[in-house]
Image 1 (spheres, one colour):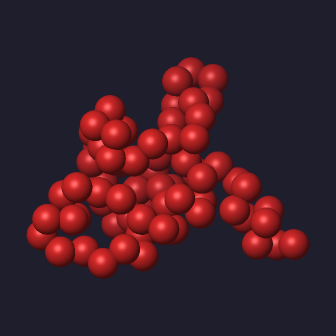
Image 2 (image 1 turned 180 degrees about the vertical axis):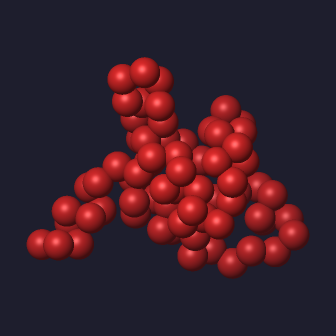
Length: 71
């Protein structure tokens, strides 16, 4: 049951960037390009991400090309 609760929690841009080991600026730039898509926007326009999506991206192998292309 704990895993379902954790997966359902939305991550802020800062939290998602930390898990991906990239800067918040890099993550914010990736969103309009469609490299990674937020699940929703909070009041005020802040992007929110799903933990499972970020975890999938974080676990992908990184080489010079795929790291630039994102998830």
